[in-house]
Image (cartoon, rainbow, N blue to C red; front, side, top):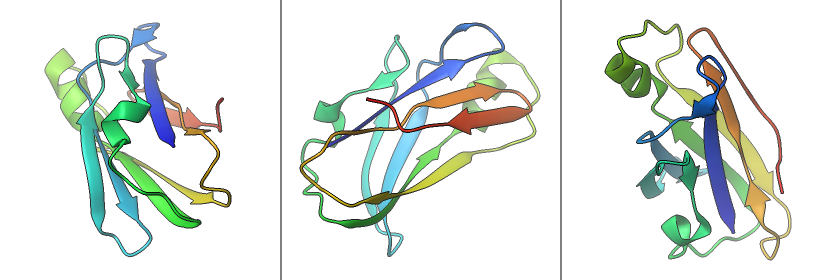
Length: 108
Protein backbone atom coordinates (compact mmCIF):
# COMPACT_ATOMS: atom_id res chain seq x y z
CA UNK A 1 0.00 0.00 0.00
CA UNK A 2 1.14 3.50 -0.76
CA UNK A 3 -0.02 6.78 0.75
CA UNK A 4 1.35 10.31 0.87
CA UNK A 5 0.83 13.76 2.29
CA UNK A 6 2.22 17.19 1.53
CA UNK A 7 3.01 19.93 4.02
CA UNK A 8 3.72 23.48 2.87
CA UNK A 9 6.50 24.42 5.29
CA UNK A 10 6.44 28.02 4.08
CA UNK A 11 2.84 28.46 5.26
CA UNK A 12 2.95 25.85 8.01
CA UNK A 13 -0.10 24.01 6.72
CA UNK A 14 -1.16 21.07 4.53
CA UNK A 15 -0.99 21.55 0.76
CA UNK A 16 -4.48 20.85 -0.62
CA UNK A 17 -5.50 20.03 -4.18
CA UNK A 18 -2.06 18.96 -5.39
CA UNK A 19 -2.03 16.35 -8.17
CA UNK A 20 0.06 13.28 -7.43
CA UNK A 21 0.81 10.69 -10.10
CA UNK A 22 2.11 7.20 -9.40
CA UNK A 23 4.31 5.50 -12.01
CA UNK A 24 5.94 2.09 -12.24
CA UNK A 25 9.60 1.66 -13.20
CA UNK A 26 8.65 1.52 -16.91
CA UNK A 27 7.12 4.98 -16.64
CA UNK A 28 3.56 3.70 -16.96
CA UNK A 29 1.01 5.86 -15.13
CA UNK A 30 -0.70 3.64 -12.55
CA UNK A 31 -2.85 6.17 -10.70
CA UNK A 32 -3.48 9.85 -10.14
CA UNK A 33 -5.08 11.56 -7.17
CA UNK A 34 -5.36 15.01 -5.60
CA UNK A 35 -4.51 15.81 -2.01
CA UNK A 36 -7.48 16.53 0.22
CA UNK A 37 -7.91 19.54 2.54
CA UNK A 38 -5.53 17.87 5.00
CA UNK A 39 -2.88 17.50 2.26
CA UNK A 40 -3.30 13.73 2.14
CA UNK A 41 -3.71 11.08 -0.50
CA UNK A 42 -5.04 8.00 1.20
CA UNK A 43 -4.43 4.35 0.58
CA UNK A 44 -7.92 4.22 -0.95
CA UNK A 45 -6.84 6.62 -3.71
CA UNK A 46 -4.33 4.02 -4.88
CA UNK A 47 -6.38 0.97 -3.81
CA UNK A 48 -6.89 -0.47 -7.29
CA UNK A 49 -3.16 -0.83 -7.85
CA UNK A 50 -1.65 -4.25 -7.27
CA UNK A 51 1.84 -3.61 -5.94
CA UNK A 52 4.74 -5.93 -6.50
CA UNK A 53 8.38 -5.62 -5.58
CA UNK A 54 10.07 -3.06 -7.78
CA UNK A 55 10.77 0.58 -8.46
CA UNK A 56 8.06 3.25 -8.47
CA UNK A 57 7.88 7.02 -8.50
CA UNK A 58 5.49 9.67 -7.26
CA UNK A 59 5.26 12.94 -9.20
CA UNK A 60 3.90 15.96 -7.32
CA UNK A 61 2.57 18.93 -9.36
CA UNK A 62 4.05 21.63 -7.15
CA UNK A 63 4.02 24.45 -9.71
CA UNK A 64 0.21 24.35 -10.08
CA UNK A 65 -0.10 24.52 -6.29
CA UNK A 66 2.20 27.53 -5.96
CA UNK A 67 0.69 29.22 -9.04
CA UNK A 68 -2.73 29.05 -7.37
CA UNK A 69 -1.22 30.85 -4.37
CA UNK A 70 0.44 33.46 -6.59
CA UNK A 71 3.87 32.35 -5.38
CA UNK A 72 6.93 31.88 -7.58
CA UNK A 73 8.58 28.48 -7.28
CA UNK A 74 11.86 27.08 -8.52
CA UNK A 75 10.72 23.45 -8.87
CA UNK A 76 7.82 22.83 -11.30
CA UNK A 77 7.41 19.35 -9.84
CA UNK A 78 8.93 17.05 -7.27
CA UNK A 79 9.57 13.46 -8.25
CA UNK A 80 10.34 10.84 -5.63
CA UNK A 81 11.74 7.51 -6.75
CA UNK A 82 11.44 4.63 -4.30
CA UNK A 83 11.75 0.85 -4.18
CA UNK A 84 9.13 -1.54 -2.84
CA UNK A 85 10.84 -4.61 -1.41
CA UNK A 86 7.89 -6.13 0.43
CA UNK A 87 4.56 -5.33 -1.28
CA UNK A 88 2.65 -6.35 1.86
CA UNK A 89 4.05 -3.36 3.78
CA UNK A 90 2.58 0.14 3.91
CA UNK A 91 4.78 2.74 2.22
CA UNK A 92 3.95 6.27 3.34
CA UNK A 93 5.87 8.90 1.38
CA UNK A 94 5.47 12.44 2.73
CA UNK A 95 6.64 15.57 0.92
CA UNK A 96 7.61 18.83 2.63
CA UNK A 97 7.55 21.78 0.22
CA UNK A 98 8.40 25.45 0.10
CA UNK A 99 8.81 27.64 -2.99
CA UNK A 100 12.54 26.91 -3.31
CA UNK A 101 13.07 23.57 -1.56
CA UNK A 102 11.54 20.19 -0.89
CA UNK A 103 12.37 17.13 1.17
CA UNK A 104 10.96 13.69 1.84
CA UNK A 105 11.38 10.64 4.04
CA UNK A 106 9.78 7.25 4.52
CA UNK A 107 6.92 7.75 6.92
CA UNK A 108 4.71 5.30 8.73
